[in-house]
Image (cartoon, rainbow, N blue to C red):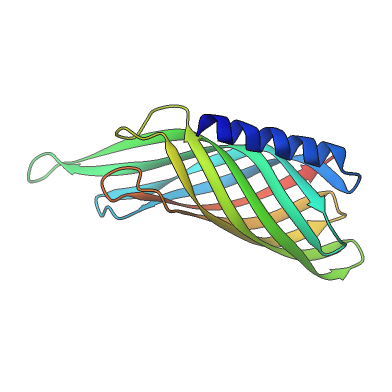
Length: 180
């Protein structure tokens, strides 16, 4: 699985850098990390950052991908005695590789709205959860391109892999990318 992820990263980088209608940039986002399936756990606010690239097939259709560091986590509520509740925060740093197809809509001068959807694969770098380090799921986003160099959007990741005890990731990102 590690070799597959590495191969995907290398192919994406080669295609993005070799295509005349491609662009590479940096992205940063506020990440509202959550979990599904465990009522004793709350999500946390964190961040996402990394390199992104777009390949424009036509004026309105593109593929986007990247290599992002995503900080997922949770806050666990444990009852110690009748009156005290202990909150334990746990962060998990993932390298995430999303691959999405998207479309640009209503282009007016230097502004265009976009929608994109696809899948992601991720590997936990900081601490494995149970016996598992891998995660995968679906991702989607909407937003706007400004001056064809700035991409502002809202993105949602729906984890499909159980990371621990019926728990799956669910992340909402609000961020921006700048393309060189």
